[in-house]
Picture (cartoon, rainbow, N blue to C red):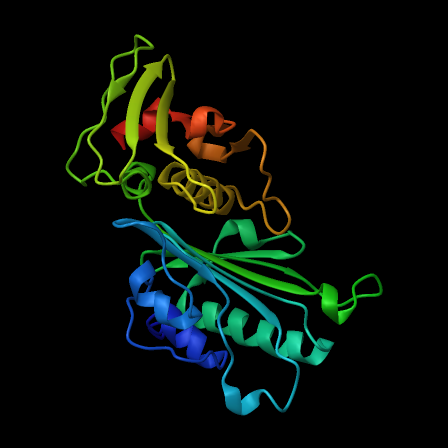
Length: 278
């Protein structure tokens, strides 16, 4: 069997004719991806992400009206959404490039079978979720979407460390008494953890300022985007209310969102306590 080509998000962006692709890791960091968008990093270092549009090569701009793009790169996931296509052929070409590249570098997972508008691939330490709307009688070209989500193929505990700014060697083992205990994090926020029965709870908070994204809100956003990729929710599931996910063999997870009262953002992440031992 022929060996699969090496996966690289940067190589895929070059294939899509994205402007300004430089050297980056197979799954880039926010700093590596910042040059693609032309917008500053969000957050307070080191708790930062990148969230903005990417540009197609200027040499192609006269050939067609380029689609709308949105790139999000956090410490635990990458999301590229392409929408509002000028015509169906542009969607078909871009979808074929993305799907073919994932098929050449990764392998389909069982979740790819029998699902409309969704495919999943894995390999080389990466899990890729591809959600899409195909052209049909109900969807014009402006309604078509290609959404690629990437996350690391690693134990959930390792991803929790990335999301919450915990050093990889910091143990998380709260006793089963429901009491909150502080955790040392490199992010500029207050982080606590507790356990009640089979559920581990993380509560993180930070002050918010008008016109800015607080570090607590950034962490909350990263958590729900990552959990939606784990759940395979696909397009259109980005709820901003209290939400929970059935993650199959991983169990159930949920986020309880605070209302930002008293100019402080407070959120909770609830996950299976079994994750802490993985």
